[in-house]
Length: 366
Image (cartoon, rainbow, N blue to C red; front, side):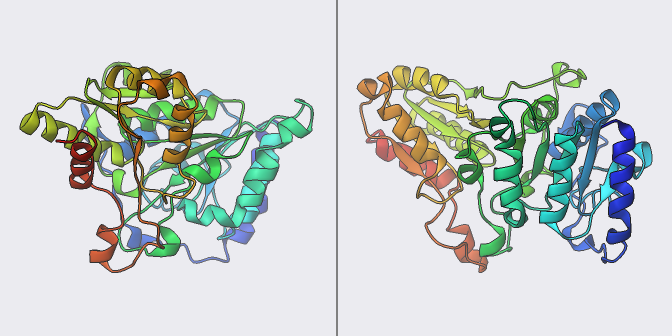
């Protein structure tokens, strides 16, 4: 399918889209793109989308309010004006429908970026993602690929209650045929999204609503239009010798805060690993770190049962790193309950830097 395929797709969706009320102003605009050296997380995603759409005419963006409203979190700000309604497509509120359209176009040769306003809504399309996108390459004997991206905010935000606070890292990370990445900072936001768009497989890009407005330094390397972060490779965010902590997404920041406090108050040096990739999992980097520090703590916002930390713990137990452990692996997770709406209970349902600080001290018997 050539660029005309996008045109036909846009024309098919636009009449349906006219029936819905595109009123998402209550979500707010979280991005400010003026700073040059300190850039917000969301602005790096906007840059990544812009660069990849400019580079490859087969790349297009589809989702609820991505066009005229510039995206619920302003990640697609200005893209409609630059690329037009044939490549930046507003959809009706029907995740199963537009996800299926996006997957079909990928099977036909386009490279869609399918945005969910929140990954909680992706449950409406989970059959399409898991069975159509994730399994077609295998079931076609390697003849039909599905090069596309599913992206949007994942895990808890603030005051959105049980049905809109779930972490889908383990859900999608368990599926052969999908690649799954989890974004923490601006470097991840740009490098992982660009790598996902260029990948020949369906890639789930898990972002975090509360991080869109967070600012991080931008290096010269990141300004390169070919800046990519390899999918399947973790990052040592902080070197240490006393204990390894593995985290992904927003908890990475909490771990780094706890690590600085432990160093200042107790002289404890924590090695912090930003996982980045859920599937494939970079177990080699974790094993190497555990063999150095002899202790491991995992941190995530997902539920404790069958989570990312559980998988890491199992793989460490099955690897040579097990013989280097001086203490059992400890998992810090979200609470094993549907997320409460009440602010005081919600804040107790997810780990912060104080929880991480205390658990590391306990593991080290300090």
